[in-house]
Length: 114
Length: 113
Image 1 (cartoon, rainbow over the protein chains, first blue to last red):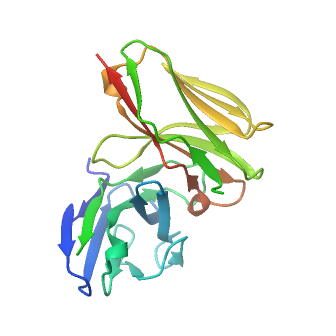
Image 2 (cartoon, each protein chain N blue to C red; image 1 turned 180 degrees about the horizontal axis):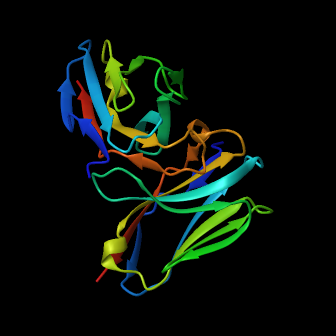
């Protein structure tokens, strides 16, 4: 039972490089989310997808794009990485977009931009 | 001022101690209150969830909400070394949806055998 799987687990990028973070869930959840976690800042929502075919901006969307490829997969793309995007990125999913349903998180991707 | 404030710790306690973890908030519209546990280099996992005021107990864990003071607490009884983790509070208003959940920065707890 994999739950939410993120790849890669670690990545080092040079400023200006691009990359895509992959996320897949096997729980048949409708809603998926991308967060970043920085020291002293808590988890901050980057983008979310309430259902297949829809995506919306969260609290800190600048510098990122997302694709909800199908019900299982939700990718996050950094087009031109900047040092300010050094962070730990978490993908999460929930059955619905309502707050009273549990969200399940992946193990995170540790990204360093030099 | 952040909407949700949480002491980052670290908090070190001996095994068997009662642990109290707390968050304060400023948004009076918050009605859903959650506690997540995050082990080192892992993603957060939901520990407890309460709606509106009152207490909720689950085994060794008790979540308490005091809306009049805008203060929530998580108590851990008979703490174990396996409880060593970072604890994140999270909260949301009614109708906001999960995308409107606001997280605290987390309190790192270490339970010493």
